[in-house]
Image 1: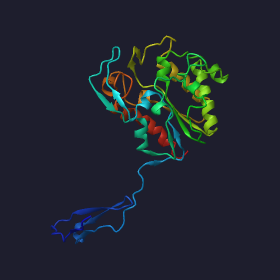
Image 2: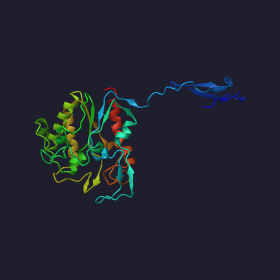
Image 3: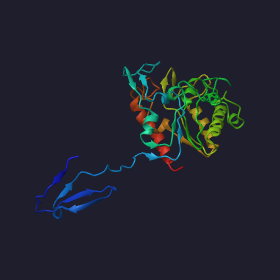
Image 4: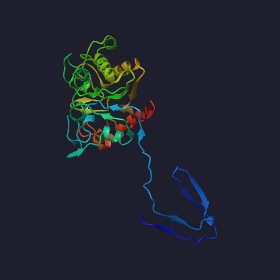
Length: 294
């Protein structure tokens, strides 16, 4: 770094002020009539710059579907049913994990699943042995899920429960642990496995689904099980209300993604483009920020 010198000011007759910022983030105004010179010299050692990231006490396990898996992978713009995109070509996703990793510093980070996520998987299953159910995958010994005491786990799947027409069931399926063949039962089976891996002090950060218009399944339509996206959201919220360590991310309402702007923020009416990711991640940031000292 070159030595720079600001020599004697030729001061005007009227009084002005110069603001000097300090390393502590404070500032002081000095009348320029009292300043003769300011010298900038080369530092003898590298300055210690504190991390701008939010330091988290807990590790995190990102458990999510294809929208999570698309982080750092190429995504193609394409039409889907009545959805028409104005864009062509492909882009490399800067998704949830990348964006959250730029803001938060976790002791460790895990993203289970093929290439970092479970593309096409629902939380519940079409049967008790449906291998496209995350609740079923949870029981598989070779699933690669980490055992980390007191971790934070994300759960984001219900857009695929909606698309795969998973039967909703009732809260009794959650209470009685009836298994993954209903959505309520699957939530309980997954939660029991996560507690086995991370203990009773585990924190669950779960979300509803973003708006969608893909493969004939929209934000307001009913699937063949007679359910809307909102039905799965209410079921998940009902299960969460039975526990004290679940935190809700309302990305459906708080992200700013609407049915009207889907062509601008998604690749195909469902999977986010990079503009969409910067919007969808904001509600996640707010909730994770609240957990920094937990």
